[in-house]
Amino acid sequence: VRLFEAAACGVPVISDAWSGLNEFFTVDGEILVCRTTEEALHCLTNISETRRVEIGARAQQRVRATHTAAHRAVSLENYFAEAQSEGRVNGAFSYGRPSRS
Image (cartoon, rainbow, N blue to C red; front, side, top):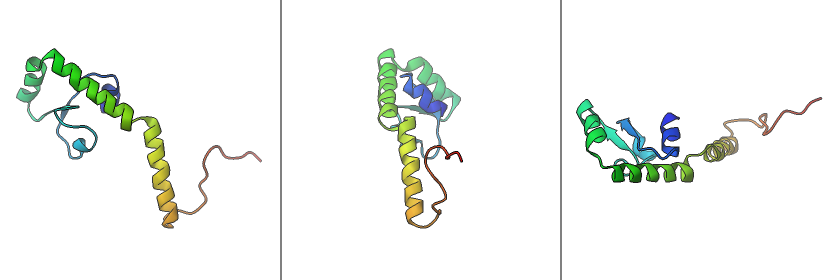
């Protein structure tokens, strides 16, 4: 979550490498990835202000386009609908607040 929050603010993010990261952000275009302390120091000291601003702006655009709470809610609804249509859940779930008796 913090990764998305930082990116939503338009700041350039430096992350460690982890499986699946490239499914959320384009490495070196929207996020910087470092595997060692030396790589992190290089990112902090040798990347120009212009490039940092560009990376932060692209990350912010990506978050706003595909990673907001609204996007997550739609995904969750779609997963639920798919599971329900495949019979993996019953109809006992309802959207919204429970009714008062």
